[in-house]
Picture 1 (tube, rainbow, N blue to C red):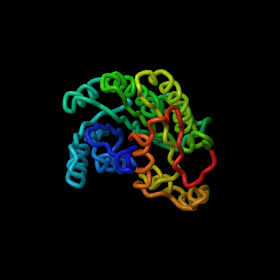
Picture 2 (cartoon, helix red, strand yellow; picture 1 turned 180 degrees about the horizontal axis):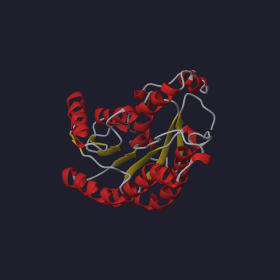
Picture 3 (tube, rainbow, N blue to C red; picture 1 turned 120 degrees about the vertical axis):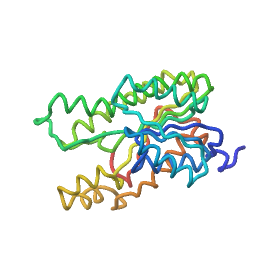
Picture 4 (cartoon, one colour; picture 1 turned 135 degrees about the horizontal axis):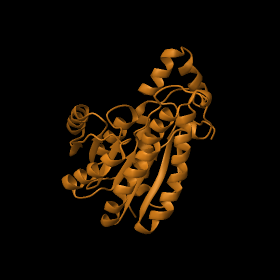
Length: 258
């Protein structure tokens, strides 16, 4: 029987976290590195990836690669995955965290360009990244893919309809991927955060002075979470602590209603 430390140990594993230069993405990549994984820090800007990779490596002692990739660009993703495999020889964990909600746009105001922009990053990016990573995981004998959703996928408001719809579609895609890749011993789950301190949340608060209090009030714990409070749940799904968990959705939301 494995000990708790052994179950969560990621020594020898390689993990990619998209959108990992800030917020919960950075917290997750730091947590995976602290658990022993070699990690890939990724966002759109190479200089920022390099900076964060250096900081995470210094803080954790892990091998860290900073590698830029715009997940909204379908054709950029295969080359990104190839470079990770060239560097590490394997991929064991993929966390599809990169996501956008550029502005508060209601259904009546929605434009096709805005809708496509949101879906290209929030849905098509995780689809393409997973398509490219899954064969690598199959060769390695197993893998864990974790999509990062949002509690807005369960009940979006009109001003975040594109964001909520894209994440609701990602939840549906999660189940389909889990069904297809189970024979390859690849687990696919979705982790849905509630209100966490982030640029997206703080940006919304700038235009609405009562916004933070409002979203905190929607949780049972009556507060907004710190980014590092996402680390335990993502380690659970990434590690051998959850070897019998796939096709599932886990909320980390302070008790918000689904």
